[in-house]
Image: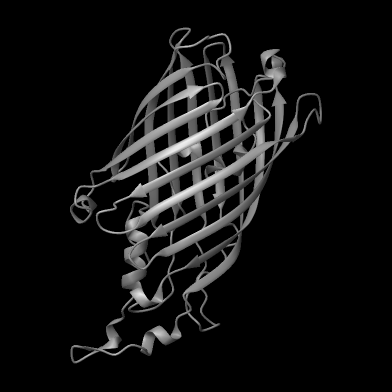
Length: 348
């Protein structure tokens, strides 16, 4: 029902407004971020607990195309290992993800709460490999302001007559979702590590419709995704951190590729919790060019991002893009400093 090839929050809002003139059944896409590494539980449930530390807390805020409407997303998450040493080094992790997305003049809102678990199996000499499987379930409530939406049959001879189509619409719908994912992380050497992940969201394809007719049946399309990320040290302090993200949902696809230049300016002995700065360049195919930058200090990572729209939508968006700010904190574990167990590649 949404024909654009690139996942776009503006497209969702426009599709809602236009499609409702014919039918109130809408297949919308899930939220997305430029700094997808700052929302790992949204990307793949297997990334729950995929870090070295006691606990991780993340928050991200996205403000997009403010010149043409209200397009904002905020997400927060907390995850941590909950059962350690299941079989030597293996552990079970759990996490909670919350996000709220608001799009368009009709205030199309998506409020979602997710709970996830992941099992991390360590393999290889020195536990330099990790196979992770994750599951996630949650509840979503979507709504919009019906008073801000107009329908073609409400205009008779140029006069507005409220009612008709709008009487058959319920401006709120809710449902449960179920997601799953796998990931493989490998510390291939002292200077190189990588991670590969695949996931599937909305496995139960819940009914999603604003139609009051109980017979209306519009299932939320499954979202398939794949991720590849790496950390390659060029020297003791400088590393390259490329990543690629692919997502597909119904007829919409999203591909992001780029690289982050990461420079340690503090003590390089403890790479996870030292002081560092980073600068990255990214491209969302057929949609936007992005830049990221930020600072890391004792387990705290502050990231900023800006999207510049390069697709034909930039004309409607009046040449504005999207701004993001993300904050992640990882509580250190004393065992990390003892070099007992380090997650092979905490790239996402």
